[in-house]
Length: 287
Ligand SMILES: C[S@@+](CC[C@H](N)C(=O)[O-])C[C@H]1O[C@@H](n2cnc3c(N)ncnc32)[C@H](O)[C@@H]1O
Image 1 (cartoon, protein in one colour):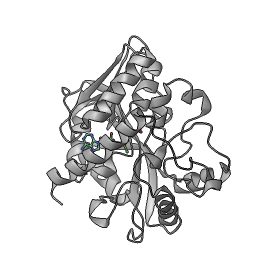
Image 2 (cartoon, helix red, strand yellow):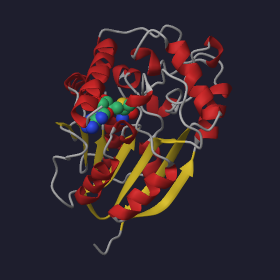
Image 3 (tube, protein in one colour):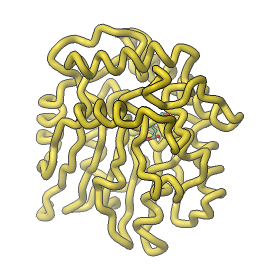
Image 4 (cartoon, helix red, strand yellow):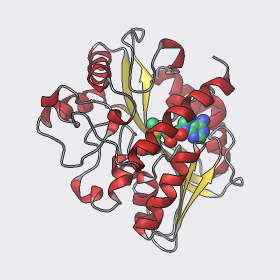
């Protein structure tokens, strides 16, 4: 698939997801492990306290695979940018952390997601938030204008990770940091489809953690933390064998065969075909 085709597929998929959330889309069987639909990648990511800080629709539309706002340790007055902001959950959480003297931007290319995010912004009464329409490969912000970039299961959807990470480096201020939770390929090739992020092999653009680390290094980033969180995700799904209090739709917003996708995601993680990784990478302050 060419890059424009990939983007159209991604837009269509996330556009449908946003519309389903807005129309009160139902989770066929929730995110509980006991239901057989527990998705080890997107389930139970936010502490109850944080979940209460955002409108329900923002939580329902949460399609990330971690909680980069907790990882980034945001400070009052900082400017934050969320790449692929979806329904806006991480932007709204960031906005609270940086406070009225700071600003939280969300960037997304899918119109339906932007509409949902703006509705969630209005419901949250967040004034220090702005959702930008655009591609993460071409960030519509000036050089050296952002303190912290976060991403939550988005870079794995781009076929041009070098370009995304070069852009991230460009807009970060000297000393700025990039905190992410993303997916990477494991030792074996991904073989179970459909998966949460890909219906077939040609939709899946995972690279290994080593490759991610070396692209980040080539862009100029310095690692502060880079770790594999796959086991934590797997054990958390098993531990949460009762229905999630968060009501997160996760995978169920995509298609009807949620159970199959959840099962495939779990097998892919267990068999080291897919990894979940998180990191904090910094731009040197002497740029
Ligand atoms: C897996 S969802 C994650 C949403 C959000 N980060 C969260 O945690 O709920 C991916 C989002 O990234 C957006 N996206 C994917 N590829 C993109 C690209 N190349 N440029 C801009 N947005 C993109 C999609 O429209 C979608 O809203």
